[in-house]
Amino acid sequence: MEFDPDRSYNQPIRDFVKRTVIDEVEDIIFAPNCNIRIWYNFQVESYPKHSHTAAEVVIPVENSYKYIADGRRFHLNCGDILIIPPSIPHEVECDSEGKRFVFLFELDFLKRMYDYDDLAEFLKEPQLINSITHPDTYKKIYNFFLEIVEIYFNYMGKVYEMSIFSRLTEVFAILAQDESSLKMVNFTNDKQHKNFYKFKSLIAYINTHYMDNISLEYAATFVGFSKFHFARLFKEFTNSSFYDYLCHRRIIAAKTLLEDDSLSITEVGRMCGFTNQSTFTRSFSAHANCTPSKYRQQIRQSRL
Image 1 (cartoon, rainbow, N blue to C red):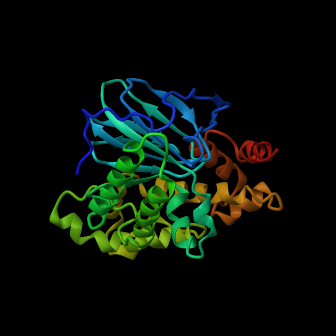
Image 2: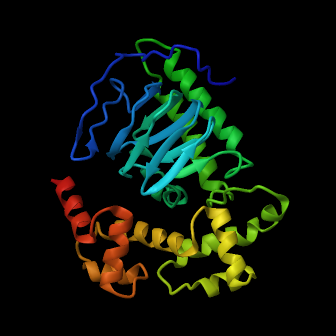
């Protein structure tokens, strides 16, 4: 079973829903009486930066598609799966014809599960899933989304929410357990593949020790390379420089800590590994397009 780009995928209930975006926050309108909306999108149209409380999943089925999510640029090929967690700012660049599915899910139900912590780290930032980043589980995940599309579009007048969420829960269960979910990308030859476990271990270390003073020299020693060779290989594996990756990971943590009003901005920066306030403010602004103070203010306003 594959996605059919020539098929007409009509909404099971009500076809057109007006899109509403206020101050870069989109008010998601799910299909009536459920927590799901799936769009079969073929418009040649870009969408400026926005966010929403729903998780978004996009799968191109004809031609490529470009997303910028949380400041990272993704060039999606047919069959790629991009998962954008709730409230992550993202935008779409589209200047050519193509077709893609855009899934919107309310995920609050997952947080009530006792093993949600296994997934929480994965859902802190956008995740690209394909045969390179998840070689052992990609096909199974892709097939679950195929089933979700069939369930959603095959019945008129009703959305079988329980059946859809059972498949989605399977997807997240796989991702929570998948050992290759650490953003190891761009395997292009056997030599790179041999180094996979070294870099996987390093990424896991960075993700749990980002608040420490981790230098490039230390990271290179961690995987057993010279710092010059390491810098090149790290970029090949993660599509990011070592310091950019470390900074990005610290900013993700800072965004979470900024939700706690009992912590000062200075404390948040220090807890995330920034040695001084000016460096924290400059780095945060570069990644989030606003200062830490402004970001905290936006959080407070969203609670009103």
